[in-house]
Image 1 (tube, one colour):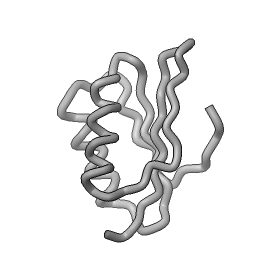
Image 2 (cartoon, rainbow, N blue to C red):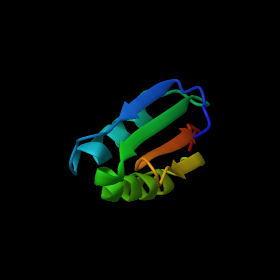
Image 3 (cartoon, helix red, strand yellow):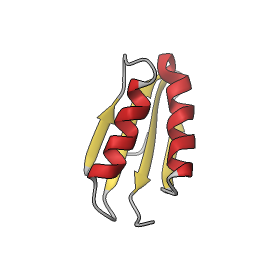
Image 4 (cartoon, rainbow, N blue to C red):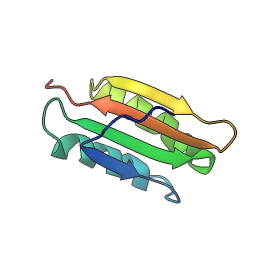
Length: 84
């Protein structure tokens, strides 16, 4: 996975819904415009990854990178906050 320097890292590893979604919404609210937020988790949080993507889309926040490492099961979503 490429290294993108984030302003805020949200690690949802080990959390079950709805906690990851709450953490994602809180992260978007607390960051300023043009800041980078990176969400990370594992295959165990696959449903949360999909829910975070849907939530970011509904909040009109652009995802600039989304990757899943199939060999390790790790995933990341990187977004850049924009004013809506």
